[in-house]
Image (cartoon, rainbow over all chains, first blue to last red; front, top):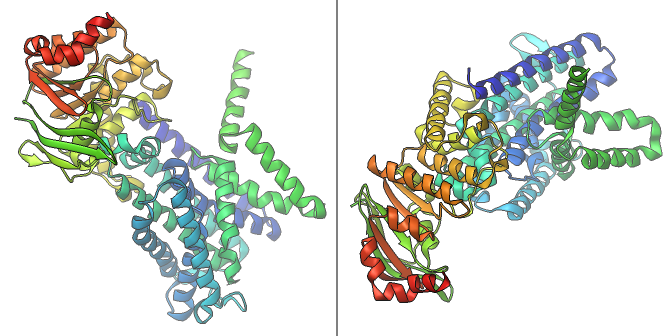
Length: 324
Length: 256
């Protein structure tokens, strides 16, 4: 077997391990506060996986991912609530609509490079966040917000409890990771990494860089849309503040804390960014301070992100055992 | 005729980097493009490979115009190049970097890749096999295939870069100072490699400062200075041309 398919198999084994861990957490946790926190982490992880592909692999820093999360959330919620779509169809369209929007606005946007692209994505995020808060007849705006009366369901099987949503989110995370791992270990994935490192040499190798960038922008938008749909079905009542600029920033932090070079980082980053504030709840006044210090320490001592730090730690432990 | 350049001009604001240059690179031959630093050689390669648009003039390759095409479309037509400053892909193993060069051998897009359809799996094997063949061709030891490409010594990175260009089985190869930074033994190996490629029918356009290599290897030499053609001909014709000696080789001899 070739070395590269070994690397791919390695990732699939990791995915199997992650599925087992998620199943164990699901089977052993009944405290709904813990479950809710973990669900938020899983939902953000899905957007962050998309952003890792976009930012980490293709080098395109987007500050507008929240727009696609919101687009996904409102697409799913409106289709189910107003058009009587089955929730699973609403969820499918919550992926497709942001993907299509990402594709269409991606082409002009991605002719920009570096900082200009980041600023343009920031503008996109701000504009859509304004639309979400002002188009009250559709979204409910900031107040009263959107009320989704239908729970997520598959056929006649209604999945409305926190535990049910945990399973739904876990399955979605595992599927998203699977798609992302496949994407990286392909001609397309190598093309993304190539264009990040040298756009000239990528073009010279026959890679249509603009089309590749547009495609990964659309894919990341689709993943953000899926996390939006999950958010809508989990919260059932939400308003436009959920999809403002701070979510885009949080997703970027997740990716940078987790890893820029591996989609696995999104899980680690999302866990820290969502679970840490919840765990620090008791420290009241010092909460933000401790949160900030932890983030700074991670960036100082694990500049490659938590995932690589964890991998290095484990391999050092194993090497230490071998030495003895 | 493989490549034919007519009246090619490139202006950057006030500066005319290439000024009405015409030359041809016959099929299955090594054509060298030489001239002092700043003569516009790399600019010409960049225009042929679609990195820069010419201000004027035409570039015709195998009967079709290349002007107006983007870089990846030109690569898809069987033109590959190397770069003066390497442009190695970071964060990639040697094998992956060369597989990236084999991009045009595959067809799968992002959706089939995400679903890992059988076509993608087959394609991965094809690309990896092609990359291994190309790496063997340029004598990169197999033990280095999984090393990070940018961590290799310069001479080896040069070879990886040539493998990255060769893997797509181009019909025209543009080499931008491939011997720069190589020691005499490595340069000799490179000369053999290029001569071998020529004997297989590959057309080569070579930009190089190593005169020994240029004169030993080239079938014809195009000399330019300040963006203009000085003369073109066989290596011996060029070497005896007084204009060339004055503009270029004379300086070389004085230096030596």
